[in-house]
Image (spheres, rainbow, N blue to C red):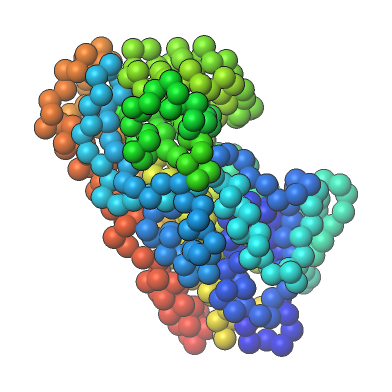
Length: 445
């Protein structure tokens, strides 16, 4: 940043994405920026258990200087295997063409925290309720505890329930007269339901080995696919635990609003009832999850912009997606890394911030929304809702009445949807954004 006066940057949300953005600012050399991180909880923490890094995001971890700290924490570095789980017989029909490095989220968080510069300021118990971005003053943040703060640039990494997104789009809606356009903009305030749930739990590897010593998860991560449902298992916590998820799809619910709570503890019987007749390997895992949590899978789809004025959205606040490609957090990390590269550029200054945000939005919005689409489609494939499987009834799938060539085609389709995770790099995106930013500055457009 070229201006001698430091830009005051506020990051609202101190989860994986917010912290990765903070690290990116430091690693990219954005020296002339004062950083304040506002977190609603009493300490940095992370909801959820398992998390995976494909080669594309692993490259970014290397760029941020995190690779060596993360390597010892990898629980599995093997490809995902695709198996058919809605029948008693174990049937494998393919695997991903690259490995997924799996971790426990808390392990990743601990590494990230060690790399946050000590001169960045963290503020806890700060739940944002609104902000004001006036042309003749700083951005003003208002918190639930009655306090306020100011900044020159606000970045909302406050997740799927983002107050920053809500405030931004409510103000967009208030600025237009046309009722239909107002309604369209207000529809982006709340996330929509995908028609899907996930039952989650983490079990002890030792406990599973005692009851099912031949369980295939001991050889690496795998999916058990079935009609309108699938099950996922992979090692975490250096292999001492296994992260498990049972996903259920009700396509008719896609695009509707789901009442809260979006996360609740349910009975083991409810979880078990969703997967009757499934593989004994699935049943063995369910039997060990005594208090499963049930999560509503919501999404934030098709935002027309990721910024307004001096305010930007990153991560789930901008593009919360389904978990079917294990890429939601990774896309948030890419948001922050690209934005940090722009802010660290010699031409960056408070005066050129509008150009920075235009370049960020132009590059990151279409890419992240394409990954959101691919993730949804990948889920539809695991749910046997596409291609030759679309019209197959549940009983026919469960009885094994599916041709082997159809399963091979499904595996190929899944890998086509996933290939960006191992065939592409985010380096080109950052170069494109920087070139675009320079063009905006030179032209004054």
